[in-house]
Image (cartoon, rainbow, N blue to C red; front, side, top):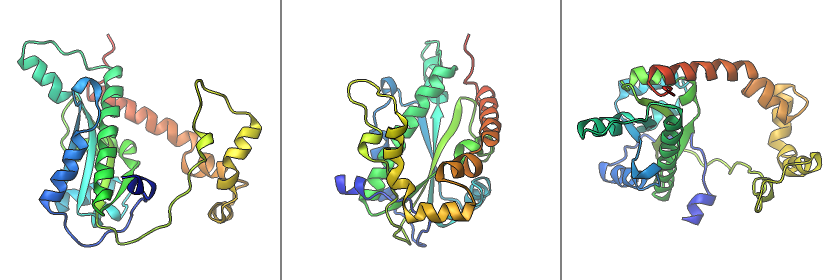
Length: 249
């Protein structure tokens, strides 16, 4: 398993090869064994194989071709709908239509997704997380017919790899680990933590391609701008209200 963890790659090209039901169910069963809030499992996983639905998902996921290539698309959703209905059917009044429980349910969904990833990669399959899920959550709600109380939080493409990309860089351990209490970063700390990343040839090429002064500006000016962040934040907040998660009374 450590080999699987250390060799994780995001796969964006897939072979035209199906995943058999037995293998997929083993992977999904690994997912539902993940830790979760109160053993309530306030999440759901939508398994999409249908080509027409995949085309619709491809369109909202910024037309990334891996969505069409991968034989299986897994959409992980925060879901208080199922648990709340169980409570209502048992004469127990649920109180999960609030911010705390979109938070808890999102954690549950992400934990399940990571178990799925590890199980899939351990079987020689490839995956890629799609960050576009939160950007286009309102459209995904419509495509997958998600009822009130259900919100998509992440998506995974799943299939047999048709590429073997290089491992992507990661910050050094001392860049993210704090011992006993949080130790805030000095400018010197930041320089040391990001030194290797900033001096990669890939980074140098990206800076030239994007015509910025440094890597940080690529993130703030090109990839995740404040304007886009505010727009998608407000859009997602409106979806949470529509799906019944923001009743904080």
